[in-house]
Image 1: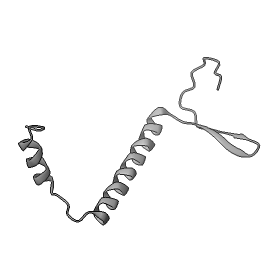
Image 2 (image 1 turned 45 degrees about the vertical axis):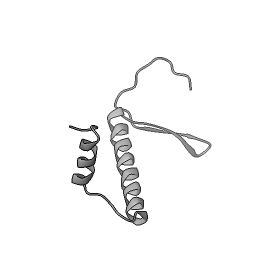
Image 3 (image 1 turned 90 degrees about the vertical axis):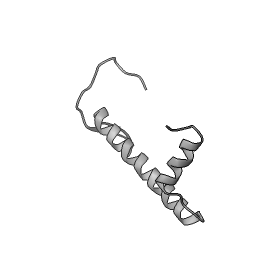
Image 4 (image 1 turned 135 degrees about the vertical axis):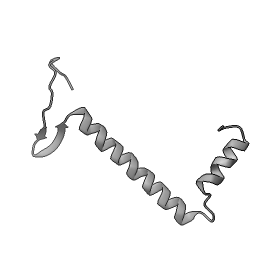
Length: 74
């Protein structure tokens, strides 16, 4: 995609090509919020999958104690 070098700020726009949505322009802060939400959702899905398939889950204290014992945490 070519740009003219112009900086566009605080613009919300949706570009369409032949009726299909192609591009959305939004503030970077909103993009980061959306990416954070996606990462949280991915983490929740991974946790749910682990809880469904694991025979035994470790508590935070147990994991922390093991990492301290291995010298990974203080």
